[in-house]
Length: 199
View 1 (cartoon, helix red, strand yellow):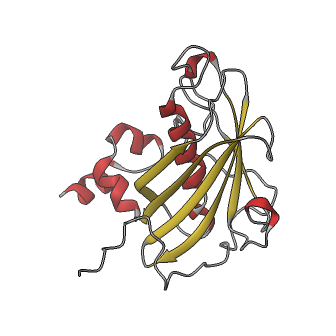
View 2 (cartoon, one colour):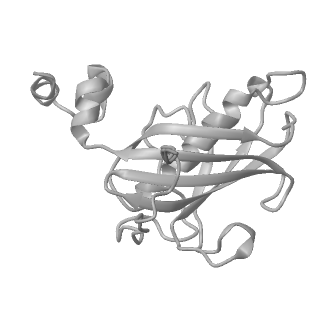
View 3 (cartoon, helix red, strand yellow):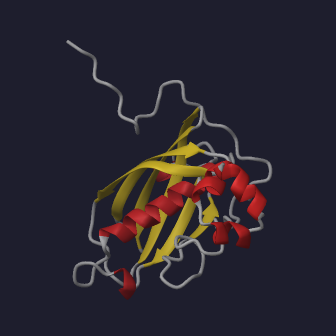
């Protein structure tokens, strides 16, 4: 009998949880936007406008936690509608990706989403406020394992969905190689830096 291979979202036994970076925002402070054009956290047309804060170290349900967590809020608007009067599932997944992705940034440099799994638990009506909470479950090398829950209208409201994700730490060269030059230049990268990363 062969042993089952672990799934990429399964937390390795030897994963650890590092402390928040000394320059990360403190508990209760807003997390900074990823960039001025981010459709997840920036106030831009077509964005979901997720607002996030660093959370304390209580765990889901109040059990002791580890201090690397984010709570987020998103108002479900008409523009997010899928089925009549309900959020499109892609917007819930985008909200999870944004909230989950804010967690690794509390301890390290940039990470990118490698895998994201969303479970839909209850309908989310247009006009409700969605509250999300994500926490770091563990780190192994460049891999960051994060989980989250979304609730309706209150931080202890009806469970609307859960998610688990794997993020991979990358360096600035990832963006220099793959992002549009005009976006990089708007953020201060020189044409020479961009060309050097792509050669």
